[in-house]
Image (cartoon, rainbow, N blue to C red):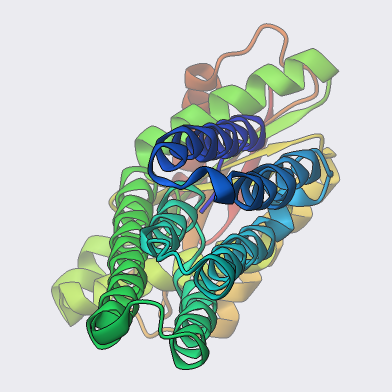
Length: 354
């Protein structure tokens, strides 16, 4: 999913700072519960291990490739914090006979998976490593006595829930993105021809016209119309008519391949092509290519049609300068040229200059 890089970096850094602050807050709470003999050990783990790890990740966030590798960085952070906690639990039990709580392991997992956004597949691997680490700790140091099985089950279940919830969240986001992409496409593209619809065609044409005026380059507007299309529909049915529309769109895409070329369905069997920074003879060459492609298609027409095979007529207006032009005016000129092409016998193009 696309995102704004500066705002995403800012959000992640704020999340990391909040994580560092939470470590300090929990320190204050934990020190009230710990015996004074363990202060030095606890402060060493939090201030000289965990806190510097978080600060290191904050520093890494200024690396220019951080966004690309952020998931791996956060996964490493989660493992480092979790195993630092395991070490503290083990030392507290073996050297001080003190049962240090394991809840921090769960908090680290949920914070890194959700606040920092470790993706599902990586979250599986990281939480599996952390579950195995906790089970290994319980094997060598049964800190919680007869509550070891329930403690192991609780930690394992909690980490599994975080992974599953991440999967559900990622899946929902993916489905939302797909829906948004479909809605965006429906708002801009004609579903039958997969060309720009009339509204999007106009918006893009206005932008191209403004750009052409700014750079003082030429423009051309082509209006295409399938010849005797109603007769074709009446003879072969609307489904075959839709296929003819698709063929027209495919031919247009074959001939006009520049990123700046604007191709759209104007309505019914009418299509518009808007070109910028192009020469008049190139426009004529493209028009002839469109006609040639229809000849090669050799799609049988209705018996009472003007030509035995389906064809199109093209009206073109070419403007060497568009300083005093509007899109509506250019389309109107192309429409009149199209009318001339129809009057002259169809299956041809008429090119006029503005």
